[in-house]
Image (cartoon, rainbow, N blue to C red; front, side):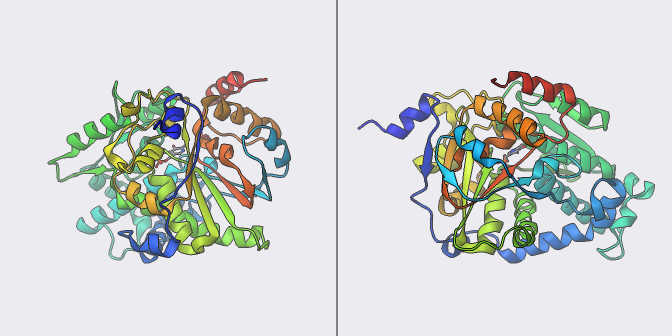
Amino acid sequence: MVDDLLERVRRYEPVFWKNPYKMPAAEALNQAPLSLKDVEDAFHRMQRFAPFVKKAFPDAKYGIIESPLVPLPNSSELTRLVPSPFSGPLMLKEDNYLPVCGSVKARGGIYEVLWYAEQVATTEGLMKSLFETEKLYSEEARAVFAKYRLVVGSTGNLGMSIGIMGRAFGFRVQVHMSRDAKEWKKKMLRELGVEVIEHEGDYTSAVAKARAEAEGDPRAHFVDDERSMYLFLGYAVAALGLEAQLRRATDETGYGLKVYIPCGVGTAPGGIAFGLKALFGDRVEVYLAEPTHAPCMLLGLYTGKLDQTSIYEYGLDGVTAADGLAVSKPSTLVSPLARVLIDGVFTVPDQFMIDMVKWLWTTNQIKTEPSANAGFYGLHDRAIHLVWLTGGGMMPDEVFQSYLEMAKQ
Ligand SMILES: *Cc1c(COP(=O)(O)O)cnc(C)c1O
């Protein structure tokens, strides 16, 4: 028998897959190695670091790294642009405007740096209590942090979050960039004193290079996007902020909430989904968006092979304008959890993401990079819809202009 879904995936045709392995939220969460308590602890750690963040990044109000939730008023026009009919209120979570690094990585990446800084500061006796984070913004503390190194593999945005926050403490930072990484992201990091190493290979191989580089060095911390619980928890904290925003934004009951999030390796959308399901239970459905050229989570979940498969096995090239999503193999930590937690996965043509950069800008003056707006493509049914925008706020003007020119019409 010909497998219709795999055939369409092989031909780079967009697909929408409802996940038959999804369990009720409570059951799925039981299979996770983490709990809501861990998410709350992560939230408290972020709060403790607010005085540091406020000093280092004045654009983060009160030192809190959060983004607006806004309604998209002229959403009816969108029905022409997306494949399925949908209705109901539509909201945007603007992680493209997160302070510090302008992408969703400001949640996971930054949280992991804060966690590590706390470990080092405690070991080195830089704080008498965990609440003295303000003291870490000083020359003495920088001299101590400079003895330690953060190492990470990235398609661009994770490197930015680790690099920018890592350098704010004075850590040495080494970022291994995959071939997809954009020039402006490398340049910005180098200007901050980050060591940027460029690789010819894809994301998975850049991560492997970074892992090998950090191994055996007790003063190096490898930020592991395939397995890290810290990254995951940093993303999950988003659910706590959203809960309060949603209560303010909507008192509509009756329909469920459908959330659409772009997916690369799966740490960001998986962490957010975990937080949302822990807080809202089965009232929230979470759908992941992947480029037609790099649907690694879809393939991992659909075939049941999880991280033991890759897009290359299906003849796909992984070449996409959505650099943040150009990933060949899903996360080892997240894929088994996504299998029982996530409501569905859909794939998105590159041209749609590029066209949406222009549409969002011309209709609403919202600035995104192509990876960031893939979620729109999966809108379906009647619900309260929440499209998670994930990056682009820090794009230089000329790069943004080039996307506007690539868009149709
Ligand atoms: C990293 C990233 C994602 C997806 O996150 P993963 O953890 O790789 O799944 C989505 N959008 C943007 C803009 C990103 O940088």
